[in-house]
Image (cartoon, rainbow, N blue to C red; front, side):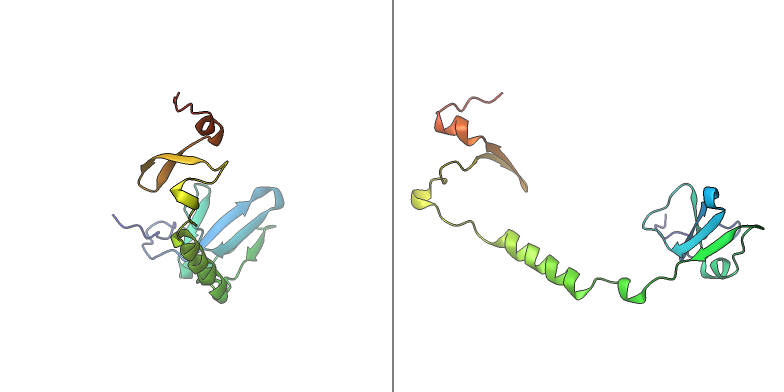
Length: 131
């Protein structure tokens, strides 16, 4: 089973490159870049069918040309991702004597990347009972 989307036109098996949407209230057809995921009321079209698209009489066709610069991640996106990875990998600052800072939640369990934290108020009172 292929995850690539194909043209919605009958008997066409070429890869889809555009998505067609109808705005009935405005009598408009909007043809834009391929949508991120398939929608039930949109039609994916190959390049040939997208180029030859005509609208019914009285309807307007709006063609949204894809911005080639927006096709891939920008330098800002890559830098933000790198900064997020660095921040996640940074070790926590030590708290004197290996004890958590006052008022900080206490980690009581861990499963993979998820942590269960205990409310600092119940930790300070010595109540460690869990509901």
